[in-house]
Image 1 (cartoon, one colour):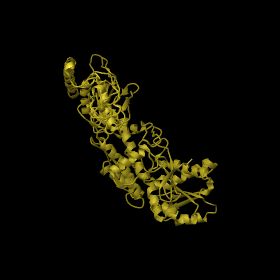
Image 2: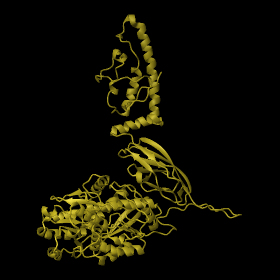
Image 3: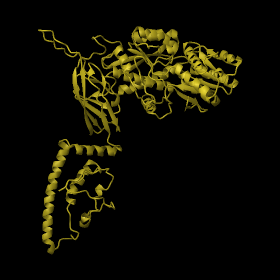
Image 4: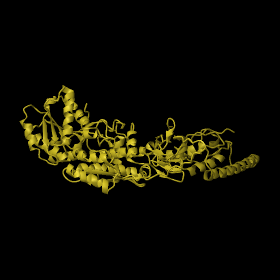
Length: 638
């Protein structure tokens, strides 16, 4: 008897006979003796596309035991002269029926009480996944090169291809006290991580652990079916203590994980359940939408991280303080966050003049200052300040990109470009970027026209008058302003210079600017260029789709926005750095976590990389342009 090879159909093949072709008419008519002898006949239950339940599979299997009997074509109702043949046939049928019953009992017992053979289990999982409409997923586990240093947190190294909804990894074999950057405990020695989170998951050994861990990985579907299993060995090495002659080396027990930091000292803003961050930004005044949107984006990223188990079991929390975009209020706002709210670090602070006040306080307290909503050079020193990290491109990079666009693409001469800038360090940073780009293009900065306005005001009359009085022709204005002042300047200048090209850096608040211009009328919005440090919010890139999904989940009714998208990216990058820092969190370990982030792919279209000598993750600048309906469209800047 030959055992057939496993078929691609979801209906389990009979172990007693070769496979039979399909029933051509799919009629479902009970088989006759002639049909059974015909090699082209196939039972109707096997004629479909495999969309049958496991119970149906088992019923077909039992029927197959009888259907494999080859009956004579001439068989008819019993007649006296055919009695011997009938008696023999009845006896054969009885024997096969007994065998079928014995096989069925054993088979069903195996299904309910014992682990299936690997091939059977794989076929069963394939059937489950086929019913969900996808292929069997696969995953790989990469091994680190060489031993790891003691207490070093390391990525699990799992890559998965074809992730079904609801799938998860169950990991076992870790040393007691080990922690993961995401997921949840499912037993004393097992951990569950959603398949969508496993790529960036990190494991941290117990403090003081030295030796190997033989990890076992199981990929499970939402219904509990195991798709695949793999193993991985991680090995940590540490300093070897040599005993003195005549004395034995004392046994050193691994230290228990602390709420944060080392040496048993509590870490400011860190508990065993929470890491608290602060944001000082305008939540009142003319620039309040910038602060609201930045906080909204960070909160979205934090909520997403927290719903996945947080970072080493700690939830991320953001506490806000309003400085009104006034440097005179920033010191009190930051001090309140640190002293009263007990924040661990700052993330997403808004503005350049306010950063000039907050930065010295953060450096003095060795406090993280990350993801500020500014491209100013004071946060990008060379070499970089240890506790200062930026996600976004600088104002110098934004203005360089737009000046090259105006000169190389729009064919405007450098002397025909003016700058409308806020009269403070924000405006200074943008103006410096424009003059630097001018020098690169023509060898000297020349006399670039600067038009000023005061922070938190809409008084642009003097700037417009200065533009009218200028002797040479001005064909483009690079604006370094906030959204309301920029809209007011465009309103006043558009009527005087209908062909003028207006551009602005990303700090303007793109959505708020579009809303302000559309209130004035479509002709004021059409053609306005804004450089961005994130991709277009109406694109279909991975990062944008994930951002929109999370935003609608946690803040229904909020529209996607360039500022909140930047906050979301900053919050997501911070979560990755926290995972790399390990469970024993303090400022020094977080700095090392940031400096260890290399080629982080968030689906933005550019990889994010930090290093000891470069604390800015992205140097990418995108171009967008408004149309007469107030919608932004991507443009090529080069």
